[in-house]
Image 1 (cartoon, rainbow, N blue to C red):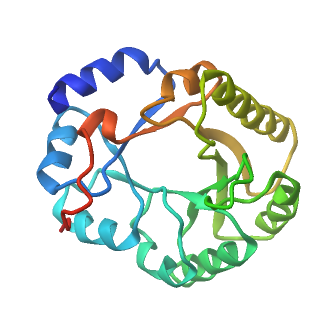
Image 2: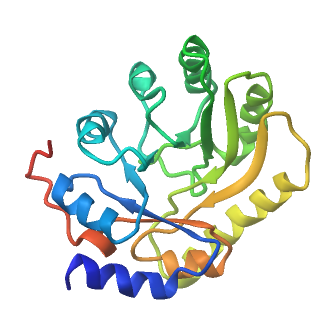
Length: 223
């Protein structure tokens, strides 16, 4: 299927109130422009360098999302360029974001990434350390927390629902409380193979790459 056909099919399943984030990592500029021309404005990149390479060559009204692990030494490059950071996972990273955005007198918007399955291969804060990170966020002047993100463990539908429900419960619990600089507006969960289940379980932002662009070719160096 073509990109246009893929997107048409996905839009049938993404209800009103759910943001469709096109994950454009490893994808060339021409493909991103095609998706843009079909009405998508939210694009997600995993790597800072790739985002930096693409951003100057694409329309100014694209909302760039940094969805991959963010190294502290790369924060300075994304200031003023990223609409939403999905991968805040530590107090050390938080302090680095605060420092660089404060220096430019700008406000960072971020999601706290939770490692809901406690997988060693994935980044994200463990649930038992979440409150500590939130406490640190309350002390910030240049970082606003907009919600939560997670990449759940691979599994069958029942297992997916278990982790999505768990994350939604955390999201709802935090939403009932009052924090400085922390609001629960965005629940980013669900990707190409499980986004329909994620939406059913309460996601309001789904991250879809292969479902829109087709299979990735990691042998291609994207400029």
